[in-house]
Amino acid sequence: MATNHLAPATGNIADNVVGFARALRAAGLPVGPGAVIDAMNALQVIDIGNRRDVYTTLESIFVKRHEHALIFAQAFDLFFRAAEEWKSMLDSVPLPDHARKKPPPASRRVQEALSQPSMHEEPQVQEQDLRLSVSDKEILQKKDFAQMSAAEIAEVTRAITRMTLRGSLRTAGEIVDIRKLGRIEKPAPIVALLDISGSMSEYTRLFLHFLHAITDARKRVSVFLFGTRLTNVTRALRARDPDEALASCSQSVEDWAGGTRIATSLHTFNKLWARRVLGQGAIVLLISDGLEREADSRLAFEMDRLHRSCRRLIWLNPLLRYGGFEPKAQGIKMMLPHVDEFRPVHNLSSIEGLITALSSPLPPHHRSLIRSVA
Image (cartoon, rainbow, N blue to C red; front, side, top):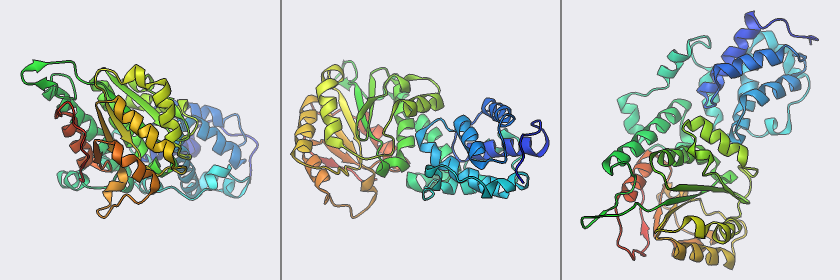
């Protein structure tokens, strides 16, 4: 039966909020103790018998990134369906439209988080549970990011940071090895163009972690996100804390996990940003599956223009995870002739291979296509 107000945040309801916050954290959402306190205070001024109000209130507090909205929706339904105290809420007002969408692949992490032995364990204990054994780490090297659990994703983010740190130490604080025939020059800038369209959603977060790590390790890194439009998130990724950096990126983007307009986005970059950031022999990382909905001659033109403006254009494509991959899509066919390297980017091995490639200098006029599969 619905109630008109919420009793003081103690007892079972408080336990439920704390347990739910820990489940979200285990599923990959950066939920801290401050957010839990805010949630308890907010629930005291709404009608907890109104499911939509409770959902909206908790979502506004716990969800700070676009890509976490569907994970939150799945967690809310699973957790409070099992919570005896709030079970009466489940058959009242319908949830928002996006909460009724097909559960995302990431819901596996939610299921695992909610099936942990106790939702009342100390956070430090749960953090330890997310760490993997040596044998698990070996398997993790080849596992596709899209198939990973919450524990594996947590381990991968730590591994990416360690990889970039090792690369930085090998090159005296820079990711790219700049030693050429005994002559030391400034390292080439890195410019990343990351596709955040719906077809890339299972990889976007970890790619952003990687870009934050290299931004943290060197000075000249510029990062742009694109779906249907281009957004410069370079300043956001300079935040020292990775969660803060990724949250800032999410808040600055309006077309997260939407459509793809690669040609339009490249045109914007070439027109407004190329001269500003592609000087001094910049290396461009184009991270996209190449699934352009409106592939035409403009795409080939903008790719060629980008290629001619940088010293080295590396296309990182998660579709290369398939052993029998062939460039059949029209957009991919148009893009391939204009890149120097075509590499996979779907697991730790491919990330490690990329870091090695960035640490290996190429001849000044290196323009032959290299396809690498890890």
